[in-house]
Amino acid sequence: VRREGEAGFADRLAKASPFSEFFFEALVRTVDLGSIDGRARLVELARPLLKQLPAGVYRHMMATRLAEMARIDPAALGDLVARPRASTPARRPSGGGMTPVRRAIHLLLHRPQLIETAGELPDLSGLQLPGVPLLQALIEILRSRPHLSLGAVLEHWRGTDEGRHLARLARQPLDVPEEGLQTEFADVMRHLAVQRTDQLLDELLAKSRLDGLSDEEKVQLRRILATRSGKAE
Image (tube, rainbow, N blue to C red):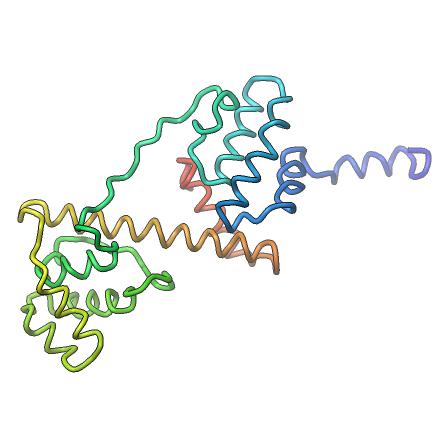
């Protein structure tokens, strides 16, 4: 105040970051939110500091924000959250040890008509998992010709590595009752959509630390975090 005067001091107060933003920004600079270890470290750093806040709504909101950043259920933070949100784990698709991508391809090979009853499918573009380009290509073909037979699908890729991979999958019988196929396919596609969102979140957080985010990317990040906290925009 002596150096800048009352007006300068008031201006600094007006431009100051809220405590919640300063608190998390300071901690995030010391960890890698793109890794599980980094997010676990964030929780361990923040937990004892948040415990010093008076119990109540503000501490509850700060703990909920920490859970969002660490991508864990708020209930895992224990007494920091006075009203833990019940979590209902999503049903994981079955598939006898198949990856979700292989499972989706396997189901479509045996029942191409699942495309007609699946409704709008998630956009898997950019999902960095083995087999995703083949799954996308298969979905695209069946969208235009859902009544293709298994033989016709295999003929489309005959003589290619993809064709040999599809032939091996086609030889494995279905292990789901006919009446459960639609639910199984919906589950596996939902699981892949979650993985795509997780990957996108990691990419946005990593970019925010290095180059900063565009306005569109900031909207994407806010939307993902809001969805994770049950407050989709």
